[in-house]
Length: 115
Length: 115
Image (cartoon, rainbow over all chains, first blue to last red; front, side, top):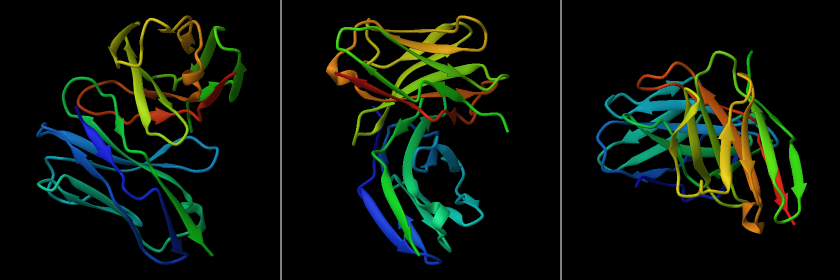
């Protein structure tokens, strides 16, 4: 079974600074997808960034980038130039490439951006 | 921008009662999901639904749970006889035309409290 671990329940960062959220996972699959979802207070989860396991290049979306280390089964999220609107819960998630498309989530990291 | 909606936002019920949680997925989506998150724990997959039938379900999704797409727009989760441990946030999600990957769009969730 796939498991996703987020070892940082809470983090904080000063506005405009950079923060990195950690995620590790366990799978016996070779092809899969990894995601970071953001959940602002009282709002739905939205996709921040995704990574296909077969791609060596790390995904980047504006201020958000990942450090994907397949051998280490590590998938960290870096947020650059943090903004107050980045305050949210961040969930790391895993999806198999083949078969069912259900997501396996970590327990989340609560990020607070401090003005 | 189209979004997934869920009603009610908060449901309080007595143990042993039946509840129906409602979701309206994005209109041209074909795959539908329910996830739940017990307070302080990870988001867990419950069930996926495609072509008017369940495509996959987790161990959590036992005989007390059922899903239905009664009218081509709503997607419902029914819990027949609620237990205290069913208290959680329930998230609905939908995704597009299938294939190897389609982004899942999440609703805002329904907080279910069983007394």
